[in-house]
Image 1 (cartoon, rainbow, N blue to C red):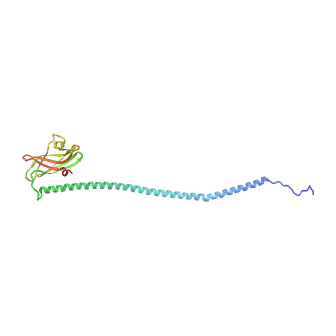
Image 2: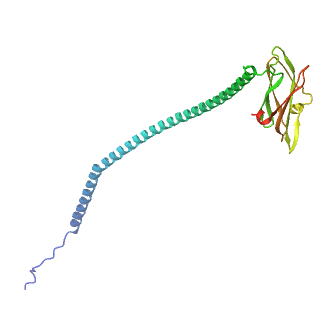
Image 3: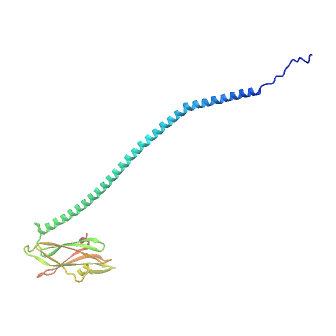
Length: 240
């Protein structure tokens, strides 16, 4: 074998060139990824933003619609509340008016019965007398009274004199009589004067002491040249 003419040769490679090629390939691959990602963003991003924008506009529109409906409902509620207050006030006024009318009708009915008994075809002529007495509670300790006096025996004559009454009842389990002065809280008070031809209504108010329970009313009349007149009424029928 000739050693000066070998069959094999060792050739040294060029590492710098291979490294550059590999870097170029990697750089191209990265750029392609970036281009794909950019394309996807360009294609998908604006569409998603547009959809989100449309949803935002729809949400705003729905909110405005709901707010408008809420405002309308609130205005309607205010109107209904005002209408309800007006209706309630009107109903209360109507009830008060009906109550007053019922009281007036009752008073007129009582007056009709009174006049019928006084001057009706079947009315009997009577001398000076106490026709009726009525006590209406003002508060827990006082009463308003109405005493009606009549005389039809001598229709041309004038009946005049003084009226007073007393209340009989109980207090602390004991019988007690309150006279005219005690009922008016003054010893110097005078009886109530009257003067009429056919009838007259006397009115006023009296005060009752605490714990006193009335049971009977005794009305007394004093007239010149006449015998004293007295009449008693049960409290259950006189009060109301």
